[in-house]
Image (cartoon, rainbow, N blue to C red; front, side, top):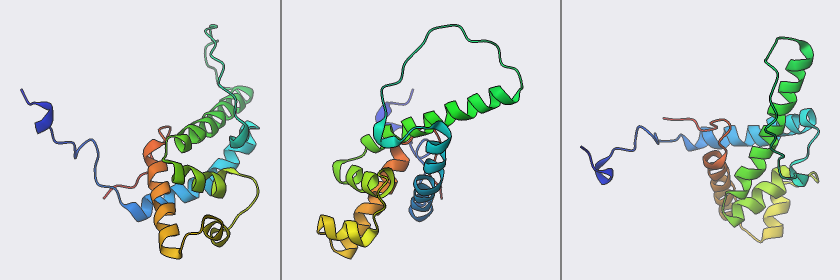
Length: 147
């Protein structure tokens, strides 16, 4: 019997291609998230706690109304899980992700860089780290690209 300290975790956590993962996160947050917010009619900045219901559900059947409902429910989950994932990042990553992607007032990198008082290298280091942290904490879909 193997002990926990002797286990090989490389199969559970394969090496990540950081550049492609960062690109996946940026695309998700700038393209997919706004679409999911539109579909769900929810904004990531004003989410409420979910309401859990233990009422029985009707069996699934294929019809357009049901497909529309499923799409809306999935979009709501994306918005909710995105908010949850951002909250799971460290403080500076939360600030960067919220200011760049979650708030509706458009802000550019150079503006946020000046606002935070960071130089170019430091700013992009933290921005890339924030994207990698988001990929780790977003659990609805895997945004990682593996080597």
